[in-house]
Length: 289
Ligand SMILES: Cc1cc2nc3c(=O)[nH]c(=O)nc-3n(C[C@H](O)[C@H](O)[C@H](O)COP(=O)(O)OP(=O)(O)OC[C@H]3O[C@@H](n4cnc5c(N)ncnc54)[C@H](O)[C@@H]3O)c2cc1C
Image (tube, rainbow, N blue to C red; front, side):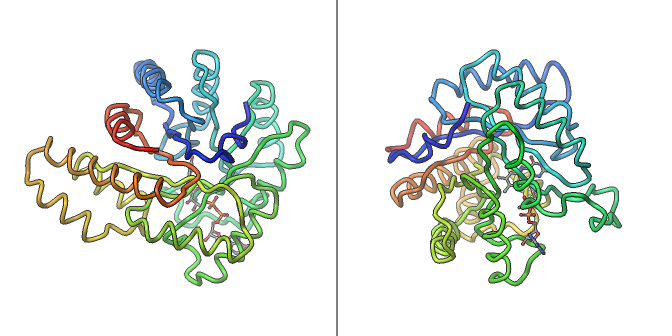
């Protein structure tokens, strides 16, 4: 199933991100979540690859289950770091067999337990190498790539970063999905910079509602470099110490963020769900398209 046509429509799309659960119970719960969120008519859902310690094989298993048990178009993430050409061909052949239409092509990060990992030996050094490789596959995959409204931490020179990004897009990307961000100014500025650079693809904005303070601290660690604007911190501080009040404040902040993006003509909103449906459903129910 391909998704690009829906991202080209005038109405912004909704989409949701999941990670592969570590056990069967988690998989059953995830399927319930997909069924629940499927009622919101998402353009697609996506499943991460090897991120946060999950195993890579489980991505395909989860993608296969979502495709066979729901009608929701499903996009696997695929990172190329550490993969050989043969492994990558095998993975792509598998997805072609599963009738997957779209892949989110990423570089990935070196394993946390290997601080001296030498990427110079990798067959695929950057996501652009993977995009090039997928383009040559017999199956006509649509390809998404990652975008970073706040900049990617590994390239401090933001002009050079846009050059690298343009090379990745020119290799054959069809759409962009962004890293999470909490200040819409960063997104609008990034979209403008893309246009100035000659990149005119649908950009799906990554939104992560904060539902707990501990979750926010974990996120600050994982999405290193993310900015937590004072307005967000103030909103959460004013919510006090009660878990439910903090959750509602985080959801209201994310809802306002999404509405402003819709009003600003965003192509799509991609919600990082953490495999749960309730915060996402609450946000979606408040939005006016
Ligand atoms: C929407 C989204 C989904 C993600 N899903 C996953 C996931 O499922 N699993 C996972 O492990 N990670 C995931 N990530 C994290 C991602 O793998 C990391 O952020 C990674 O550091 C960058 O990946 P990339 O595809 O943007 O890499 P690239 O586009 O290769 O860029 C990485 C860095 O290299 C620089 N660069 C690019 N080309 C060159 C060049 N020719 N010379 C020098 N420097 C260059 C770029 O400027 C950038 O700083 C996701 C990120 C996003 C935004």
